[in-house]
Amino acid sequence: MSETLFERIIAREIPADIVHETDTTLAFRDINPQAKVHVLVVPKKRFRNVAELAEEPQLLADVLSTARKVAELEGIADSGYRVVFNTGDDAGQTVFHVHAHVLGGEQLGLFGRPTGN
Ligand code: AMP
Image (cartoon, rainbow, N blue to C red):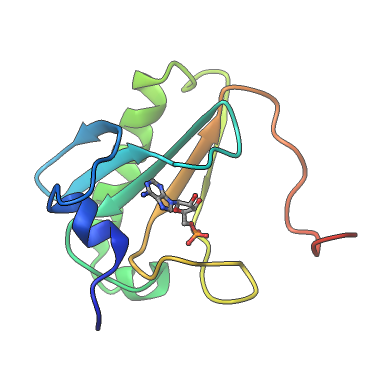
């Protein structure tokens, strides 16, 4: 598998606005935010998507725990937030290092409808 952008962020070769870090995960702000709060949570170990990450349940749990921590740090744990794993082409996945999008800070729109409908 060729290296993705997110391995380079994890290795600190590319700058990112880091929100939180654990031994196994890193959380940083999305460069093109789709909500007032939009943070990406990645496991430091590479899996292409959440389906592959599910083969390591503890690491999947670590990603979700970091998502919860991000929500607390960003002050959106009580107001509500969405955690999204885009998986594959129809979902629009562009970076093939699994990442959870943590979105919130305002009322979020509907999702799941085809583009343009
Ligand atoms: P996805 O479409 O689910 O694969 O999400 C990839 C996300 O990575 C998009 O929301 C991009 O805006 C975001 N992204 C791309 N490059 C960077 C970067 N250098 N730093 C932070 N987020 C990025």
